[in-house]
Length: 627
Image 1 (cartoon, helix red, strand yellow):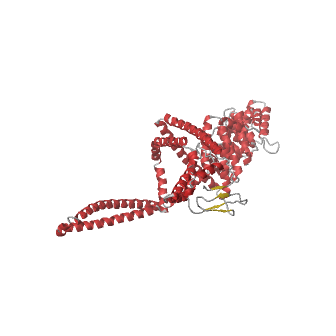
Image 2 (image 1 turned 135 degrees about the vertical axis):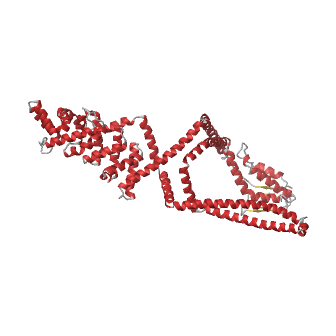
């Protein structure tokens, strides 16, 4: 009678994995195709670009990179030198206080689109011409910005514009806040009159101090300069004439109605006196006496153009002509190119990584300068040591070769010819000589090996690495042109390598399958976890009989069940119903098992039943434990 056991069971299978994997697979596939197409397109464009470029173009591109690098090094050196020169003027400042000035230099460069090299140069000139202007970073930055605007408005060099601006401010005892006023007066004078900004600045050099002492304002002095410019008296000559004319008017006692000298009153007084004179001779005598022979031309021009002078004075007061002129002159191709170059320089000089590398280079070069004798001696010693090592290695190789020959002779001698050597005195002597040579060769080989070990220890020591780095830096500076030429020759090889590498990356992403990748990872994890169980089943399957066959069958089922290619692929596993499981159990050959079958189930209601035994095998049911 067949043994049966009935266990009421309800199975609920919910497949939430297949749909998710399907969506993931579809998304990954779409992403792979899109990415592959995009990468392939970029790859095609890059290949086309390099194919269109000839060898000359590629060489020029490489040389361009070299030129940019050389320019960057030059700019960094110029900036460092400028900062050092400026700091010598404000040497009393601590590092913390001086950091405010370097920050203001960077800020001015950013706002004006001028290079930090030019800005720090203007700082140096400003501080050198008037140390008071350098007492605060805000004050010196305001004057620097004004000098940059003046330079663009006048199309003059920044250094000259800075000197002109600070010189005029010094002559009229103006503070840093008056910098914009000065540049606007100069630019406005250029707009209303004939004298340019540069010519006016030259005139101020000879006239500014006297104008200040005579209570002539900045605007009035500019109007006087432009009045003479109307009659082609420019620059230093105009300044000299105005200085003499003003001093002569003061000497004549004219223009003191208010108690202080006034150029307007002086000209009016002189003009009224001239008008009262009835003859031309009397008028000429008065003018000659008043202004002197050297300044009579300027005197006549001023007396004849009092209204023009007053009109010019109004025209140069309270304007923003400097900013307007600077904006117009900056809107040119050449200026835009200069601004682009200056922006690159500013990036280098304000970048923290660049500054850090620059500091390391300074430390290395400082060490080199302080220890040049030690470095040269070390380099010579290393070269000599390497030459000696090379000599030892050559000798060692030679003796090794001779030792091989001697070993061959020795083996031959110790064989069939051993008796002959023993009986032949000459042969015996030669044999002993070869033994000595072999000993010496072995000693030399050992010495060479030891020397090589010492050389490696020296080569990996910190001092050797420092020396090597310094020597490398020197070599770079000395052989810079050769290095650039070598890199230019290697450019074509490099581009071919990049193209091949890019093609490989594109091919990889086109052929790569994320599904297979994660499936292989999962398969490896499952195999590793089930390896002990599979090993046990494999060993049990070697036992003859039903136990071995059952273990082999279980191993096959386990392998099939844990094969993820059946799970993530198109195949879906279908769970069997309780009836199908019972039918399969009834068809199994339970009679092959012998012994006792213990079944532990959680059955508080005693619903599990069994009929007879399994082919004589007693069945023990327990309701206290379960799984």
